[in-house]
Length: 457
Image 1 (tube, rainbow, N blue to C red):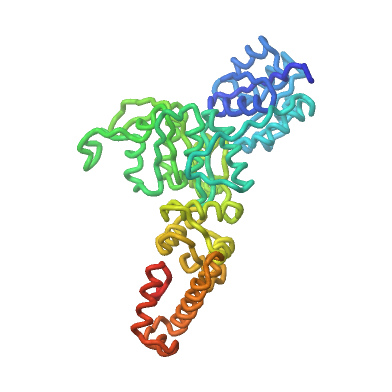
Image 2: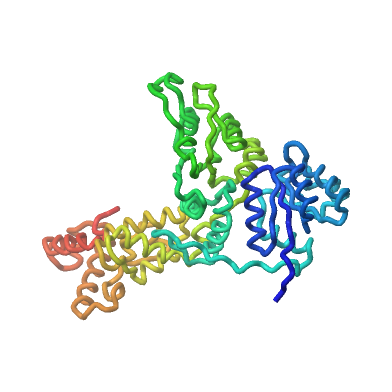
């Protein structure tokens, strides 16, 4: 057993969220981490307890990361320093390398890249990763089977306790709000409120008041003072969904609130300060939005200490059936089963609306099936088409059906097929089947009660 002490890494950053995230991750990797909030504090810490490596932000008030690098090299020439920057001009320059930096990390930090870089700088045997911590228990209703989503949970569990601002990205309907809820649940703020704001659902002229509150008389209709969502979230977490829809003017005000926690209600000059962790989500490519001038670069990096991308449902097919069964059970009021045809359709559909589309499809199916086995016919047309579904006989839907049930299923299959062939014209269908219209009507009433499609959509 290796009895050598763990290498000491000094983490320097004026942003407490970024600082805490990097330090906690390094500790999980078997290193000893110490933090400093400024260049001056870092120099004092290095003199008191010389580190094996320094990881420092570049842009800090007072002494910058580049100035700290030069000072450290004068005091400890052999000390390796890694610089972290969100600014392309530093990453693309070679000047800092000439001053002795061993490498750069670009914000938002990729934690796996950080671990590899630190080990490379200190030597591959510098520290062994601590045993991987188990993901905390998932709350009811969160269903995960795929490796892709288990990786999302691993990163979420790692970032949640740090207090860092996180940007959750992914297509609409992938479950970004669920991830935000897990971050809050697994953080030190779990006892505080989780306040959600959908920036796309609130008119631009009202969003500022929604976030920061307003004073009485601040605008037409402001009949009384109102606290905003920042105040409601004090001591907890504020989740800003669809942050990419926010106007540039409001982005500037949000930047100030993220920098020092201060803001003013609409119609007031009095500064308020709150302790809030901000989580953001978007389906947009914010890097492109920044490049095209629609989103502030400084706000992007303030909100995106670390990014958690949530993959679309088509990239994690192992989750489709477990989620479908969960939603069917919830909306059907009891344990549900999926027929082979329904399974084929669910697995064949591309799910452009992701988990949200799947949930809606299963709610529809559960309502039509009214319990028991969910057939392909109960799914929305676009989902049925993906699997090339034909009406299923009960014998296929439920292999345990007896001879009488199989015979009834054959009859039902024939009637429904003939009904569609005659475009749901009941008189023509009855003539083609050689039965009376009254008998057909009686049968169709039975099938409707089973939730089968007996009317044109």
